Amino acid sequence: MERNCKNCNELIYAGKNHCANCGCKWIENRITMRQVGNDFADMYLGFDTKFVRTFVDLFKKPEAVILGYMNGRRVNYMDAVRYILLSLFVTGIYTFVLKQTGAIDKIIDSQAAATMEAYMDMGMPEQQAIESTAQAQKFTQQIFEFQGFFLLLTIPLLAFAARLTFWGKRYFNFTEQIVFYLYTYSHFVMATTPITILLVFFAPDYFSYLGFVTFPLLYLYNAYCYKKCFNLNNATIITKTLVSIFIIIGVFIASGILIGIVGIIVGLILKATGVL
Image 1 (spheres, rainbow, N blue to C red):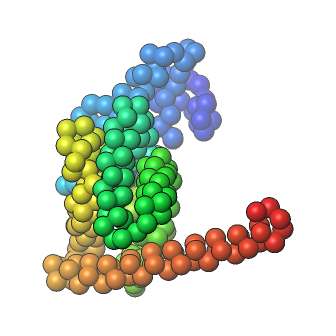
Image 2: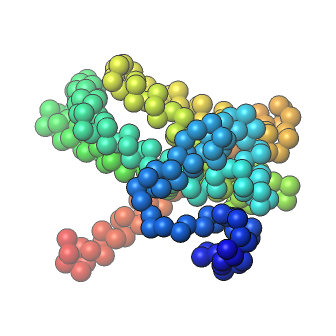
């Protein structure tokens, strides 16, 4: 029996279960938990799903995923927005597991002890050292709890720095740079999160040094993706990488100064209005 698609209202011919126009599946019965599970499995599980193809090809041929999305070829891979939402979901699971098991509290406490000792070695008065250590603990806790927010906040800054590094019409514009980092940053988060969780549980003493490994790896991975997307030679990608380091440092310093100025102005306004 012929019927009209519920999504785009195009005609679905007899014997067909999907719309030829938008690809939407025709559903006769009311939705069930089994159908929800099947839809989830079709999207994320198995070896021939969009997620698995996207995850694998962002290692093997990132240009196919990134340039494909920019050029409108979006059938075989997950789109950039869904991919970063999935990475935020993974980050949420990571945060939940470490908080519920108390693993992150143990790490923060051990870091606090080392920080306190460092302050005392610097000759800082004991009371001031205790207060400074408590502030450092609070800051670390907030960074951990809101790392998904900081992930989203970092992407526009990286995209801006990359736009300055790769200036010219043959390279990505600012919006395309954001798409690039939506894929690469999300991919790196999902690839390294399981390793981070294992490290926290089995080698917590090395957790503090994790950033010294992950940040260079992220930088190298982005350089690899740029090399693939723009077909750059080794000399060019090395030069661009060195230039981008100075630009990113400058962007983050400028952002920090701007945030500090805004914070001071807001504080003065609140104080003048009697709120503080």
